[in-house]
Length: 111
Image (tube, rainbow, N blue to C red):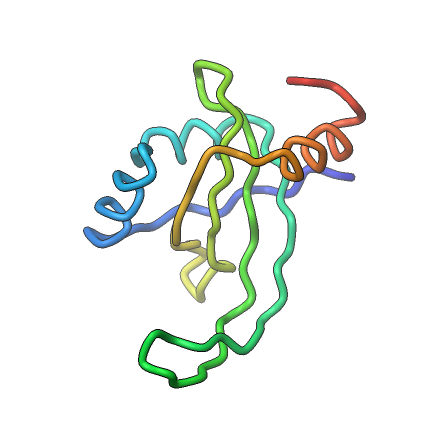
């Protein structure tokens, strides 16, 4: 899979607080983006909110890659806006499926 360019990342205070709940910081996201992350497209879909309303969620991408310490992390980012910026939505430690996808897209290599 050819490497796609990571757009400029954007965030807000909510994102910073949300990442902290997952034990992550903006530095983690930027380290992953600067490395050789794998981007996996996620389609737009209907989502039910806690209040019972149903809304369309925009298409997004999962960005899977390693931070400086070698930890494999996953971040969800929105597609670039008109200014070329992608907003970080959330992040977590990569699960087994994401480890496998990362290895598959990186040709079986661990790095």
